[in-house]
Image 1 (tube, each protein chain N blue to C red):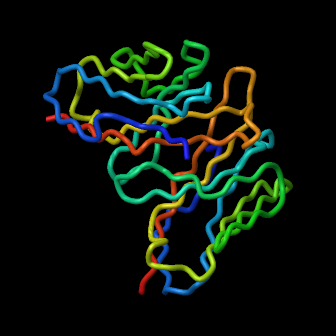
Image 2: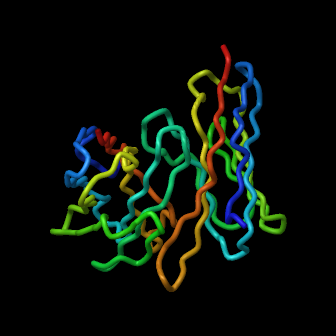
Length: 116
Length: 113
């Protein structure tokens, strides 16, 4: 079964450092997303990406965040200068409403980011 | 007003019980309805998907959508300890501006052996 894959599974970084989280969405999907989940809290939308540009972003997705699709398969989230409150699980996801399987969103296993 | 409302629980039931999980929503444009299961520190896993109103059954799981009431449910029959997880409802519509999904806060379920 196709799946969304994410790397790294866990990263520890010092405050102020830059972090890049990587994702390989499902190959025939066209919409890509990043979500965040602080431990014990709800899943929060960060950004959606379609046709090589951001289609929507939340208030959380401020100037320290950026996304990129550097090639035909990878989708990355960069956090420029990490803060303690960025510690969370980051989920990549993908969807394609045009598929006969319907409009569903599939998540990766997450990248756990710890900022110290 | 939140787009999707879900009782966070926690919900604790004995093994073998029937579990009912529910969400309400406000936007009548939603057409696609999903339930996800999330184990601790794992990604949400798609359990059930329904388009528009009606019921859908998959093994011990039944999803119901009542668009007139803006209410969706997930029933788990013969619940097992392995069903202990957080259950998220989600819904979507395809807008001109993109393809957005709206999630409930999740209901934490514990099935006691």
